[in-house]
Length: 273
Image 1: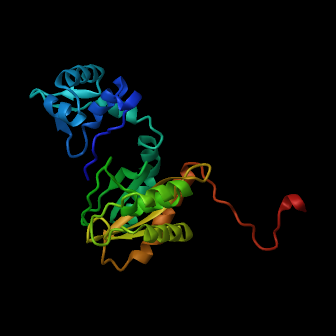
Image 2 (image 1 turned 180 degrees about the vertical axis):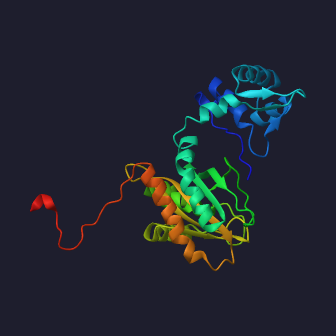
């Protein structure tokens, strides 16, 4: 999936500010365009060549960009160092990885961890099964929320207003099975909340199905989602649901979430005895 460079502007009358122009240079890079010439950056960022040259020079000096011997620019390691500080990035990945590895060992299928960023799901960890179904996913990849299992989980646990805004917007279609009807999407989201899992079949490709469950933070809010992706015709999907739920629960507890404990019948509340 190609993510277009950011086009938001912050100045009066829509005039780009200095930060807008600087960010537009960084936004010119994406998974489909990891290496760009200065001319490419200028064109994709919507800047004059002179302005692009000045901003690229400043970013390169700081370490946000790197220039190879052929004069081509790449994202620099300095940005990786900064991104590693994001609580929903490397820190969450490191904490979740043992549970993701356990899920992989139990299934030997593709395992994914993702978070929400606006109307997109962003994949922050991925373990690829050696003989598992092929998926169009890499760390940092984005897809619309409604088109993936992890995305449906994250969307289902957004606020009602955010859900309605999303459902009212255009729903990108990738296969004949992609959810494109707002009413159907609302029903699916309600079922995800009821069941605690999302099963997304053939929404991005015709041969894949994912089972996803929510990961909760210390206050119980859903902060991420974990999933297993299997061949669409896999008849073991019902058996995957407990495994995915267990992985999500383990990550949630590692984050500090404590599920509410329902008292056993007859025990009551000791404080009222």
